[in-house]
Image (tube, rainbow, N blue to C red):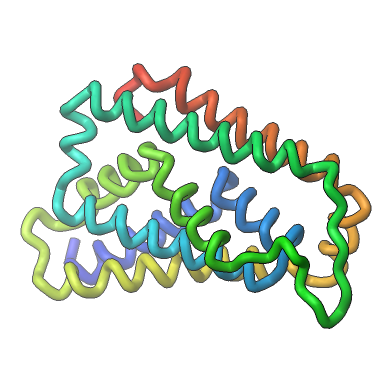
Length: 212
């Protein structure tokens, strides 16, 4: 497989992974609907930066450290699971708090900088993502890739991660989804919190499994 074909295949595989439902999707959609489009886009930006971080780890071959040092991988899984549960608890506690929107004013709770860090930390809190990246790179990237691959892959991966979640943010921040959310905010937030909690618990209880 030529380097260019390998890069295209890696990017396709990562796009499919990004489009799979998970905590990242839930957080971007929830911030876009419940806060503002800017918050959704800021969260998407955080996801993109997280993807660049994981691509750097994969390019350096550091994913093998996670696979080889069991206690480190287990620790990261538990820490990631606990963070997701903490994030879910905050969403649950605020589920019954009303939100007021008008056409010209963003919600007072809108904070794109905070949303960016939530997006980044959510992306980085899942060590399985690092292993997924590492496995894709190990399986598809040539053993000695040309130099251009090291410069081309990170921005391309950023475009995929941030681009997909930008689409999610734009779609979910439109008027109709926002109106539906406002009418059912308590239940939507609690369902989202429950889903994120389930993902966090899955990480913790599966921490002893080193494989994917």
